[in-house]
Amino acid sequence: MEKNYGTEAQTFLHFYPAGTDDEDAASQLKVSRDQIFGVQNYAWANLESTHGSKVYVYRFARKVPATGEYVKYGAFHSGELAYAYDNLKFADRPWEQGDHQLATIMSTYWVNFVKTGNPNGKDLPLWEPYNATDKKIMVLDINPHAAQLPDAASLDFLYNELRKK
Image (cartoon, rainbow, N blue to C red; front, top):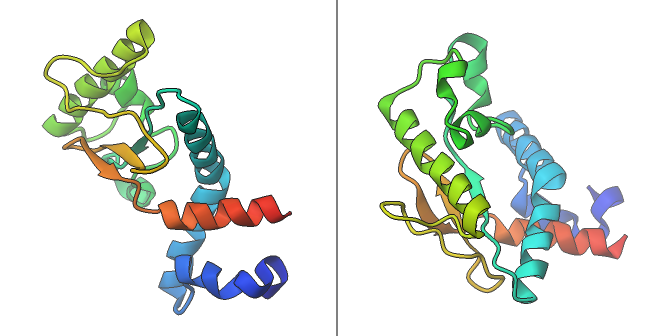
C-alpha cells in the first residue's frame, strides 16, 4: 500500500479495508470495480454535469438470478444488458416477476433516452440528472430508486490519486 499510495495508504485502507481474508476479498472486488469502471465514469459525470450537460448515472444493483457456481457473481458488468433491452427470454436464468418488471422499466428508460435525451416517462420512477454536488444516481434493482452515490468518497480518493500520477 505504501509503495502505491505513500502517505495515503491508510486512507486507501479506510475505503478498502483488509483486516481479514473475507474483508480483503470484498475490498479487492470493490477496488477492481472502482478502478476499472468507477473512477473514469465518475470523473466524466462530474465534469460533464458541471459544464451544463444532463448526465444520467445509474448503478445496476440487481443480483442477477443464477444457479450453481454462477450465484457468486451477483450484480455484474453486462448483467444489465438483458434488462436494458428487455431480452430476459433469451437468457436461461431463474427469473422472478420483479426481473420482468425491472426489464420493462429499464428498456423504457433506454428507449426514452434514445428518443429524447431524457430517460423519464409516464409511470416510471423519476430519474434525476446527476450533478457533482448531490451525486444522485438511479439504483436499478427490483425497486428502482434514486439515491446518493454510496461510494463517492472512495471514488474521489481514487480520482485524486490518479491525478497525482
